Amino acid sequence: MPEAQARYSKKEFARKGDEFYERYVRPHLEEGDEGKFVAIDIETGDYEIDASELAASDRLLARNPGAQVWLTRVGSRYVRRFGTHRRMVTV
Image 1 (tube, rainbow, N blue to C red):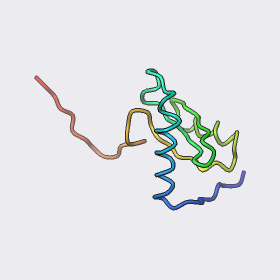
Image 2: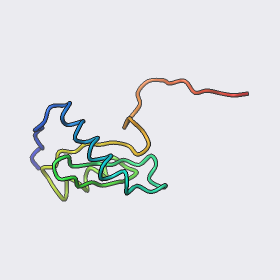
Image 3: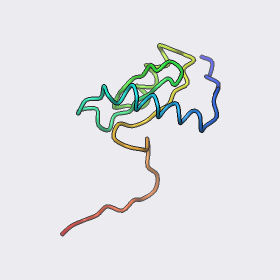
Image 4: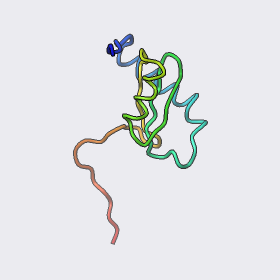
């Protein structure tokens, strides 16, 4: 399968991905979707939601092999976190 070629700058790619998520995906999310991954084709607006980022991306690419896939996580600004982060502990 040929690899999709990037057709947008990183800034434009992120802007379009966030815009599609806020405008078309977020209004359709349900309570059980928290923490799931959303793969969005930033050109068509098609999207897939799954607990697995790979499953969501694979289903989207199966429908549209040339998709420009923006990946985000429901309820988080980040798909992944790296390193340590502090957790508040109350005694």
